[in-house]
Image (cartoon, rainbow, N blue to C red; front, side, top):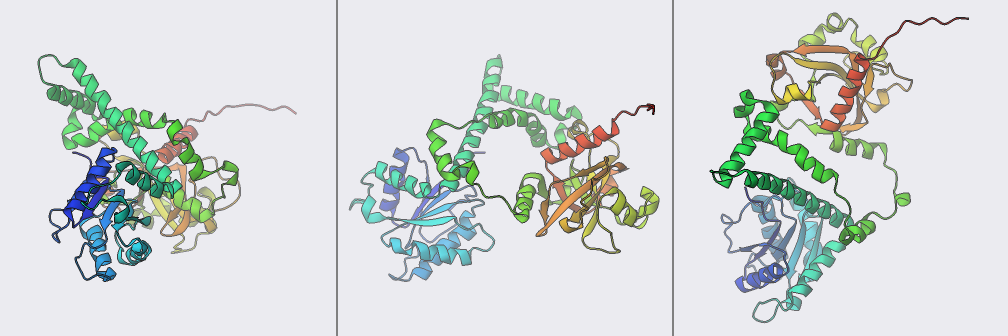
Length: 432
């Protein structure tokens, strides 16, 4: 329930550990001290860590045996700390020249764990007195800021993350304040529980809250958090950081098609991490085998003709791997949130390589996604409003999930599908 540490300090000398930790804490940089004794069982998982202070000689080996020292640090990161995102290593040592060597070592060592975006060194002798205390906490923190400041784009990204965390904190505070104002006979904790329960019921209805209370409450809290994030603006204290990190708009280099595809995947396409979300709104599943075998009977067109004339692709060959027929779940948001019964609505789509997309003006019924990366290649998804069908949940659960469209792109698709279906038709005469 409590946030994981974002700054950790690891040292085998307790006096150095205490000195560094107290110095950081005095300047408001809260951190987790870890006295390394060779045992890793007491070291907690720290997936959201952003800065790791590590003494070079944790292994207690012979002086100059840096490979063993590097292996100890790599093992802690890979097997114990297990960071999930970007982080910086500050090598806390009397041998600052080893920072680059450690960085190179970790690039090779860490295969299934994110690598540090930088490894920098701070000389212990400069910042610690003979008793192990920090000479000047302000100087130490300023040195750390300079290290992060040497990577302005990373600093800007961390700044955005800190602002988002602040927005989440304000959203939680608003819920607490609302509950506190309503407390009468019960306790504040009981009133918060009642408020959250009512939020859940409002989001998904009483019949479905027990299936997943977290999902239900999250559905109701998202708009509160979303507004706080959407209305964030630059603060004077951060303005110079962002200007330094990004420069001027006129100097920004254009993206290649491949880079745009990777960014669009990040923005709009969620990976198929587990099969439980095959029935989720926006899920993209492979066309079931039986429907592929009866394609012409199901959709009133042969696959080749449908691909070329209705889904705006170049000629589709038999067993052509550059095409993939899929179904996109297009359920109404309220029906999905309240888990309404009934078969799930899908629209037929064609996932195709960028080289197979026709260049002429497409049919009005066709929706086309931005380019996105799929399996290392640039793809597009084409969905036709006229090709729709329903599938029971049991059938959907047997399907293979390809990916899921994120909310923004899914809303764009559904808006076009509904707009096409609601278009008016008139009878008119034109004289000579």
